[in-house]
Length: 188
Image (cartoon, rainbow, N blue to C red):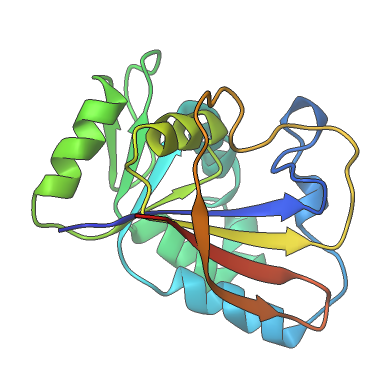
């Protein structure tokens, strides 16, 4: 059965977006060929990408563009061609290639998808989706790339959660640019 993972960059003080949803802080930093290879390797994996409407809108402004193909050709190709799911009650249609719009109850829909054969899923961005699905016990792995900076303000991936979620460390990987990838799974 398919697993559901989260992958997001976070600041050292725990924010995955800055004030007003700003994500510019997550791009740039100290150049590191090993980190760049990791990003490309992650993009080359399979599965289905899962977004909320806000993240979906941000992604569609960049990945389908010629600039994305010029700056990040491998990642752009994968982002554009992998199957995508967007959860939104307000969108009328999804225009990005290979995207399925789901307007029904997200928790019930993800529960159904996890019970049927299919590819694994990964949530990118989409904090409100993460908190709801984590609280429902549907997230199998949390992967976070902690970047060596402090934002001082922003939004966490878990805003709105009212229950405690105990996690166990799966693995870590440190990069020369100071980024550290942390992987956690819920404790049984």
